[in-house]
Image (cartoon, rainbow, N blue to C red; front, side, top):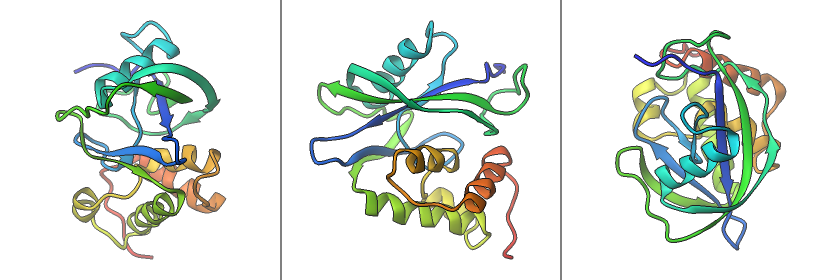
Length: 182
């Protein structure tokens, strides 16, 4: 099994109407998100974001601008890396060219969403984090992938309290921990 490099990139891709491209992940952790992945094997952050966008949604990056990022304690499918569980994230706003052609292996249900639709999916994620949905229910009808809520909040696309962001960090770090209602 691969060891995590503790470094990830993500892409915020908007259409001309200001809607964000998201898809439901076919792999763990579940949730709706934009293209993302580890930096290792891609050279550097810019190469990684270009590669992940192409691999996951079939679009070519024409321009990328770093807009946010920080250390997040989110677990991935790999063994913990030298810094333990988590990733130093770099999130780019990208402009793309080409025709949307999502990867059937990594993605399902690719769609463009308005901020109000992103907020509704964020509420689903919060319901899961608070124990109102089981892991199976969240997998079947996912909200936003927990680690991605921060990036959407940073971009001004959703509103979430500091307490809820802390709860989502806990969920991202412990994705297989069953929540209890409370």
